Length: 294
Image 1 (spheres, rainbow, N blue to C red):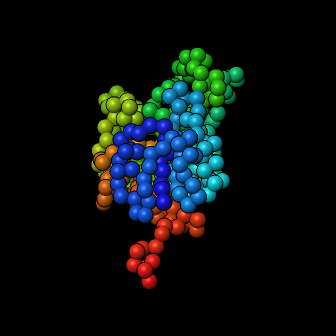
Image 2 (tube, helix red, strand yellow):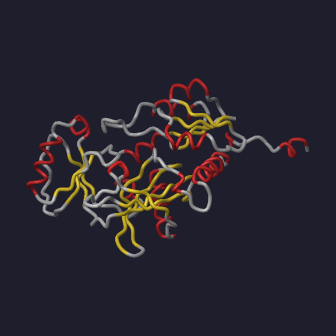
Image 3 (cartoon, helix red, strand yellow):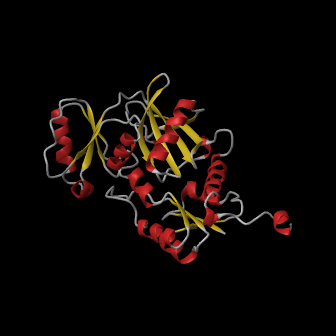
Protein backbone atom coordinates (compact mmCIF):
# COMPACT_ATOMS: atom_id res chain seq x y z
CA UNK A 1 0.00 0.00 0.00
CA UNK A 2 1.13 3.50 -0.81
CA UNK A 3 0.83 6.71 1.17
CA UNK A 4 1.55 9.80 -0.88
CA UNK A 5 2.17 13.35 0.18
CA UNK A 6 0.53 15.39 -2.58
CA UNK A 7 2.43 18.62 -3.11
CA UNK A 8 4.07 20.69 -5.81
CA UNK A 9 7.47 21.01 -4.11
CA UNK A 10 9.76 18.83 -2.07
CA UNK A 11 11.01 21.07 0.73
CA UNK A 12 12.48 20.16 4.10
CA UNK A 13 9.17 19.14 5.64
CA UNK A 14 7.98 16.83 2.88
CA UNK A 15 11.40 15.22 2.51
CA UNK A 16 11.59 14.78 6.27
CA UNK A 17 8.25 12.98 6.25
CA UNK A 18 8.81 10.55 3.38
CA UNK A 19 12.23 9.50 4.72
CA UNK A 20 10.66 8.15 7.92
CA UNK A 21 9.29 4.65 8.38
CA UNK A 22 5.62 4.44 7.38
CA UNK A 23 4.29 1.23 8.94
CA UNK A 24 2.76 -0.97 6.18
CA UNK A 25 2.98 1.87 3.65
CA UNK A 26 5.36 2.89 0.90
CA UNK A 27 5.80 6.69 1.26
CA UNK A 28 5.76 8.75 -1.92
CA UNK A 29 5.96 12.44 -2.80
CA UNK A 30 3.78 13.16 -5.84
CA UNK A 31 2.26 16.14 -7.60
CA UNK A 32 -1.55 16.07 -7.90
CA UNK A 33 -1.39 14.74 -11.48
CA UNK A 34 1.20 12.11 -10.56
CA UNK A 35 -0.96 11.00 -7.65
CA UNK A 36 -3.92 10.46 -9.96
CA UNK A 37 -1.81 8.27 -12.23
CA UNK A 38 -0.16 6.33 -9.39
CA UNK A 39 -2.58 5.75 -6.52
CA UNK A 40 -5.46 3.29 -6.43
CA UNK A 41 -8.24 2.21 -4.08
CA UNK A 42 -6.81 1.29 -0.68
CA UNK A 43 -3.90 3.73 -0.93
CA UNK A 44 -3.78 6.96 1.05
CA UNK A 45 -2.88 10.56 0.28
CA UNK A 46 -2.19 13.69 2.30
CA UNK A 47 -3.06 17.01 0.68
CA UNK A 48 -0.22 19.50 1.16
CA UNK A 49 -1.24 22.13 -1.39
CA UNK A 50 -0.05 25.57 -0.35
CA UNK A 51 -0.99 29.17 -1.05
CA UNK A 52 0.03 30.42 -4.50
CA UNK A 53 2.98 32.80 -4.54
CA UNK A 54 0.70 35.56 -5.79
CA UNK A 55 -1.53 35.17 -2.68
CA UNK A 56 -4.53 34.81 -5.01
CA UNK A 57 -5.68 31.35 -3.95
CA UNK A 58 -4.65 27.75 -3.38
CA UNK A 59 -2.24 25.90 -5.63
CA UNK A 60 -3.74 23.77 -8.39
CA UNK A 61 -4.79 20.27 -7.37
CA UNK A 62 -7.96 20.36 -5.28
CA UNK A 63 -9.74 18.67 -8.17
CA UNK A 64 -7.19 15.83 -8.11
CA UNK A 65 -7.74 15.22 -4.39
CA UNK A 66 -11.49 14.99 -5.04
CA UNK A 67 -10.95 12.47 -7.84
CA UNK A 68 -8.62 10.41 -5.67
CA UNK A 69 -11.26 10.24 -2.95
CA UNK A 70 -13.92 9.19 -5.46
CA UNK A 71 -11.56 6.42 -6.65
CA UNK A 72 -11.31 4.91 -3.15
CA UNK A 73 -8.10 6.56 -2.00
CA UNK A 74 -8.23 7.71 1.62
CA UNK A 75 -7.51 11.45 1.42
CA UNK A 76 -6.32 13.33 4.48
CA UNK A 77 -6.44 17.13 4.40
CA UNK A 78 -9.19 16.87 1.77
CA UNK A 79 -10.23 19.87 -0.37
CA UNK A 80 -12.77 21.17 2.14
CA UNK A 81 -10.14 21.19 4.90
CA UNK A 82 -7.56 22.92 2.71
CA UNK A 83 -10.06 25.63 1.79
CA UNK A 84 -11.20 26.06 5.40
CA UNK A 85 -7.61 26.51 6.57
CA UNK A 86 -6.14 28.53 3.70
CA UNK A 87 -9.04 30.94 3.17
CA UNK A 88 -8.85 33.06 6.31
CA UNK A 89 -12.42 34.28 5.96
CA UNK A 90 -13.66 30.67 5.93
CA UNK A 91 -11.31 29.94 8.85
CA UNK A 92 -12.86 32.76 10.88
CA UNK A 93 -16.36 31.42 10.24
CA UNK A 94 -15.36 27.85 11.13
CA UNK A 95 -13.75 28.96 14.39
CA UNK A 96 -16.76 31.09 15.26
CA UNK A 97 -19.12 28.16 14.70
CA UNK A 98 -16.92 26.06 16.97
CA UNK A 99 -16.97 28.74 19.66
CA UNK A 100 -13.18 29.17 19.63
CA UNK A 101 -11.41 32.47 20.35
CA UNK A 102 -10.35 34.30 17.19
CA UNK A 103 -9.81 37.98 16.36
CA UNK A 104 -12.90 39.71 15.01
CA UNK A 105 -12.62 39.39 11.24
CA UNK A 106 -14.51 41.15 8.45
CA UNK A 107 -14.26 40.91 4.66
CA UNK A 108 -12.76 43.81 2.76
CA UNK A 109 -13.65 44.07 -0.94
CA UNK A 110 -11.83 45.94 -3.67
CA UNK A 111 -14.97 47.67 -4.92
CA UNK A 112 -16.50 48.93 -1.68
CA UNK A 113 -15.43 51.40 0.94
CA UNK A 114 -14.71 49.62 4.23
CA UNK A 115 -17.45 49.78 6.80
CA UNK A 116 -17.08 52.35 9.55
CA UNK A 117 -13.83 51.54 11.30
CA UNK A 118 -13.86 53.29 14.63
CA UNK A 119 -11.65 50.79 16.45
CA UNK A 120 -7.99 51.31 15.68
CA UNK A 121 -5.40 49.91 15.46
CA UNK A 122 -6.44 47.10 13.15
CA UNK A 123 -4.82 44.64 10.74
CA UNK A 124 -5.37 44.34 6.99
CA UNK A 125 -4.34 41.03 5.42
CA UNK A 126 -5.00 38.82 2.37
CA UNK A 127 -7.69 36.16 2.49
CA UNK A 128 -5.12 33.71 1.14
CA UNK A 129 -1.96 34.78 2.89
CA UNK A 130 1.31 33.37 4.12
CA UNK A 131 4.84 34.37 5.10
CA UNK A 132 3.52 37.62 6.59
CA UNK A 133 3.37 39.19 3.15
CA UNK A 134 1.05 42.18 2.61
CA UNK A 135 -0.07 42.12 6.25
CA UNK A 136 -0.36 45.72 7.43
CA UNK A 137 -0.95 47.38 10.78
CA UNK A 138 -3.18 50.46 10.48
CA UNK A 139 -3.22 52.76 13.49
CA UNK A 140 -5.76 55.25 12.18
CA UNK A 141 -8.04 56.06 9.25
CA UNK A 142 -5.23 57.73 7.31
CA UNK A 143 -3.02 54.64 7.46
CA UNK A 144 -5.96 52.48 6.43
CA UNK A 145 -6.66 54.63 3.39
CA UNK A 146 -3.02 54.56 2.34
CA UNK A 147 -2.96 50.79 2.80
CA UNK A 148 -6.03 50.36 0.61
CA UNK A 149 -4.53 52.62 -2.06
CA UNK A 150 -1.46 50.38 -2.13
CA UNK A 151 -3.55 47.19 -2.19
CA UNK A 152 -5.66 48.45 -5.10
CA UNK A 153 -2.68 47.60 -7.34
CA UNK A 154 -2.43 44.01 -6.04
CA UNK A 155 -3.84 41.19 -8.15
CA UNK A 156 -4.90 39.17 -5.13
CA UNK A 157 -6.85 42.10 -3.72
CA UNK A 158 -8.68 42.70 -6.99
CA UNK A 159 -9.48 38.97 -7.22
CA UNK A 160 -10.62 38.13 -3.69
CA UNK A 161 -10.46 41.26 -1.58
CA UNK A 162 -8.91 41.02 1.84
CA UNK A 163 -9.70 41.04 5.52
CA UNK A 164 -9.87 43.60 8.28
CA UNK A 165 -8.99 41.97 11.57
CA UNK A 166 -8.93 43.04 15.17
CA UNK A 167 -5.39 43.57 16.42
CA UNK A 168 -4.46 41.34 19.33
CA UNK A 169 -1.88 43.41 21.26
CA UNK A 170 1.42 41.87 20.18
CA UNK A 171 3.71 40.51 22.89
CA UNK A 172 6.55 39.75 20.46
CA UNK A 173 6.03 36.00 20.38
CA UNK A 174 3.46 33.31 19.65
CA UNK A 175 3.07 29.55 19.67
CA UNK A 176 2.89 27.40 16.56
CA UNK A 177 1.64 23.89 17.23
CA UNK A 178 1.63 21.02 14.75
CA UNK A 179 -1.55 18.95 15.02
CA UNK A 180 -1.58 15.55 13.30
CA UNK A 181 -4.37 13.02 13.52
CA UNK A 182 -6.07 14.90 16.35
CA UNK A 183 -3.06 15.33 18.64
CA UNK A 184 -0.27 17.83 19.11
CA UNK A 185 3.01 16.32 17.90
CA UNK A 186 5.19 19.41 17.65
CA UNK A 187 5.50 23.02 18.78
CA UNK A 188 7.77 26.03 18.81
CA UNK A 189 7.73 29.51 20.24
CA UNK A 190 8.31 32.09 17.49
CA UNK A 191 9.99 35.28 18.68
CA UNK A 192 9.81 38.38 16.48
CA UNK A 193 12.96 40.43 15.85
CA UNK A 194 13.27 43.85 17.50
CA UNK A 195 10.89 46.38 15.99
CA UNK A 196 8.73 43.76 14.23
CA UNK A 197 5.21 42.98 15.48
CA UNK A 198 4.73 39.95 13.23
CA UNK A 199 6.17 36.57 14.23
CA UNK A 200 6.74 35.04 10.79
CA UNK A 201 10.10 33.31 10.37
CA UNK A 202 10.17 34.72 6.82
CA UNK A 203 10.31 38.18 8.45
CA UNK A 204 13.18 37.34 10.78
CA UNK A 205 11.48 35.64 13.72
CA UNK A 206 13.44 32.86 15.42
CA UNK A 207 12.15 29.50 16.62
CA UNK A 208 12.66 28.43 20.22
CA UNK A 209 11.94 25.00 21.63
CA UNK A 210 8.96 24.95 23.94
CA UNK A 211 6.73 22.55 25.84
CA UNK A 212 3.22 23.88 25.13
CA UNK A 213 0.83 23.99 28.10
CA UNK A 214 -2.17 21.64 28.03
CA UNK A 215 -4.64 24.48 27.48
CA UNK A 216 -2.76 25.53 24.32
CA UNK A 217 -2.75 21.93 23.06
CA UNK A 218 -6.48 21.57 23.66
CA UNK A 219 -7.19 24.78 21.77
CA UNK A 220 -4.97 23.78 18.84
CA UNK A 221 -6.62 20.36 18.53
CA UNK A 222 -10.07 21.97 18.63
CA UNK A 223 -9.04 24.46 15.93
CA UNK A 224 -7.74 21.68 13.67
CA UNK A 225 -11.00 19.80 14.17
CA UNK A 226 -13.04 22.92 13.35
CA UNK A 227 -11.56 23.02 9.83
CA UNK A 228 -11.36 19.24 9.39
CA UNK A 229 -7.57 19.24 9.12
CA UNK A 230 -5.55 16.05 9.54
CA UNK A 231 -2.15 17.78 9.50
CA UNK A 232 -2.10 21.51 10.18
CA UNK A 233 -0.17 24.17 11.98
CA UNK A 234 -2.12 26.27 14.46
CA UNK A 235 -0.82 29.69 15.45
CA UNK A 236 -1.83 30.84 18.93
CA UNK A 237 -1.32 34.37 20.24
CA UNK A 238 -0.96 34.77 24.01
CA UNK A 239 -3.47 37.01 25.76
CA UNK A 240 -1.90 36.61 29.17
CA UNK A 241 -1.04 33.78 31.56
CA UNK A 242 -2.85 30.64 30.39
CA UNK A 243 -4.94 32.45 27.76
CA UNK A 244 -4.61 32.19 23.99
CA UNK A 245 -6.46 33.11 20.81
CA UNK A 246 -6.30 31.21 17.51
CA UNK A 247 -4.76 33.52 14.93
CA UNK A 248 -4.35 31.29 11.87
CA UNK A 249 -4.38 27.68 10.67
CA UNK A 250 -1.87 26.50 8.06
CA UNK A 251 -2.79 23.41 6.05
CA UNK A 252 0.67 23.19 4.45
CA UNK A 253 2.61 23.88 7.61
CA UNK A 254 6.38 23.56 7.44
CA UNK A 255 8.29 22.33 10.47
CA UNK A 256 11.81 21.40 11.43
CA UNK A 257 13.53 19.31 14.13
CA UNK A 258 13.16 22.21 16.62
CA UNK A 259 9.45 21.38 16.77
CA UNK A 260 10.12 17.98 18.37
CA UNK A 261 8.56 17.32 21.77
CA UNK A 262 8.87 13.91 23.39
CA UNK A 263 9.81 12.34 20.04
CA UNK A 264 11.04 13.41 16.63
CA UNK A 265 8.32 15.62 15.13
CA UNK A 266 8.46 13.88 11.75
CA UNK A 267 8.05 10.46 13.34
CA UNK A 268 5.21 11.81 15.46
CA UNK A 269 3.39 13.09 12.38
CA UNK A 270 3.86 9.83 10.50
CA UNK A 271 2.64 7.73 13.43
CA UNK A 272 -0.45 9.92 13.88
CA UNK A 273 -1.35 9.92 10.17
CA UNK A 274 -0.91 6.16 9.77
CA UNK A 275 -3.11 5.65 12.82
CA UNK A 276 -5.79 7.89 11.34
CA UNK A 277 -5.72 6.16 7.95
CA UNK A 278 -5.86 2.74 9.58
CA UNK A 279 -9.24 3.55 11.14
CA UNK A 280 -10.80 3.69 7.68
CA UNK A 281 -12.47 0.40 6.68
CA UNK A 282 -11.25 0.70 3.07
CA UNK A 283 -7.68 1.57 4.08
CA UNK A 284 -6.80 -1.04 6.68
CA UNK A 285 -3.17 -2.17 6.55
CA UNK A 286 -2.44 -5.82 5.79
CA UNK A 287 -2.20 -8.17 8.77
CA UNK A 288 1.09 -8.78 10.49
CA UNK A 289 2.97 -11.82 9.06
CA UNK A 290 2.33 -13.88 12.21
CA UNK A 291 -1.39 -13.18 12.05
CA UNK A 292 -1.49 -14.01 8.35
CA UNK A 293 0.21 -17.35 9.00
CA UNK A 294 -2.31 -18.19 11.70
